[in-house]
Amino acid sequence: PEQQVKGIITDSALVKYFASNHDKITTSPVITQVISTSLLDLGVITPPPIVSASPDSTVLDAMTLMSQEGVSSIAVLHPGPDVGVLVSAVTVTDIGQLVIPSESKSVLSMKLAAFVSEIKNPHGMINGEDLYPVYSVLPTSTFGYTIEKLLATKVHRVFVAEEPEPSSPFGQGNLKGVVSLIDVLAVFARRLGIEANPGLMRERRRRGSSTSVSSTSTKSHHSSLRRNSSIGNPAMLGSPRIMT
Image 1 (spheres, rainbow, N blue to C red):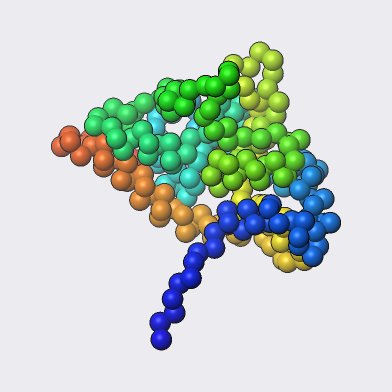
Image 2 (cartoon, helix red, strand yellow):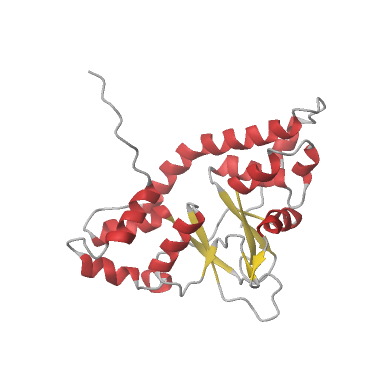
């Protein structure tokens, strides 16, 4: 007989379970200690190279990068010391929200600096606080806070940036690395005595997600151009990748 699917277990669901029930797990003292430990002390930050683009890159460049690298978000970096200063992050969801409703292909050539401002604008502010999700944490942020950020923003990874310089116009500092849901699960697994290789886990996820991201990017691309028969040269998809 055919087996009936009872449900799907996702990485975010597992992370949410551990975060919500760490005090009920048999080895809770170990898990609870991890929750309150900083990312720096935990050694959980994955250092560069990180998939990124400059503010002068276009939306099409970002879509191409996501498709090629099998990721759902990229860092937008301003040239600076070390890797660069984190300006913002752009996700496949952000692109879909702006590109799909568009009736013009001009949005594909929009610079990421303008794109970030565009997607932030509808969210507005309350009491001076920007409502657009901040996809970054500090090296000194606790593991628990980072998990909350991942779950609240509904992303697979958050970028880790230093404290910004007082004169920085971006509100964020130099990019130091990234923490993903896979990194979080690997930490929990090790504390519970389970062998875990986050690098291998990431590679498997990347292979599995690249098709999904590529499909989303293609739909966004075609939707924005469907009312214009002169789609342009397909060679545009070969825009140079901007890596760190």
